[in-house]
Image (tube, rainbow, N blue to C red; front, top):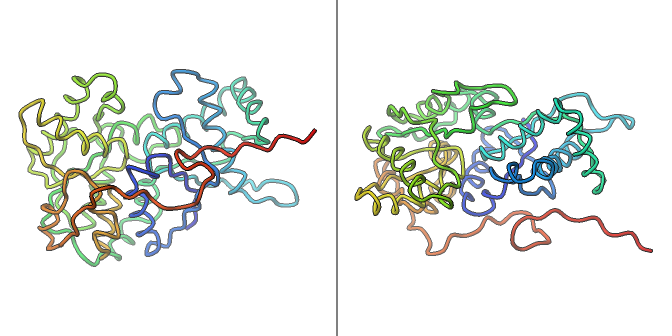
Length: 337
């Protein structure tokens, strides 16, 4: 099965383990993810509130590039078959699907966005692509039965709290694949891998997003509630599908402990990492050790020995880009006078 792939900025850096573990499990599942060439940032969660037209044009550029690269031409006419663009990041998935939907509903907006895209020789017809989250593809296209067939090391004895966050199942611009208030697809996936899924009532509540940069009081209390809920049900770890959720629960756990006098040490891993472990891959192959809250004590229940994490996180090495910092779009060369 072949898909377009929009990794987003987080998978280039702090969520590198998400990307590497996805690529590691793709082969045994017969999945091919073709990364959109020259993609740019989706604007995260804030930009659309700052400048709507610029934000839609920013995301529209990614959709236009993906359509240009994914949709074959037949005698000069684009194929009418709908192609799937997959986003592992929940914020990227939300932005891509929202713009895809609204460009089809608001003709005036679509005209303005395409006018902006024309400066780079691009154009996007709303609905040409279907934007999907990675979890949707894994559970619905691959399916639990095929996943179970790949399990070589059951995660028996591991107590997992599945955390969806607030974006992936709502508002569902491209069609709902799970319940918006109490989703269960990730629960079932973890059970398929042999893990014990604990009750986690706050599984679709917000982690605070970028609130950590705006109001520490609000952000840390939101994170504390999630950690407490998992700890109350004696979860060994929280498994998520969003880089922002993973970052907040992992990186700010010490701050929560200091603020509230708690002692949480709950590792936060991506669901693709757990799939890789269950498929028999080594912890290092799926990026275990890059998390801040050490996962080794939890994985010891599975009899796994994990190499201690390196002092400095290693950036994901993939396609070489012109810019050595953030992935920036390549600007067209000015015409020679």
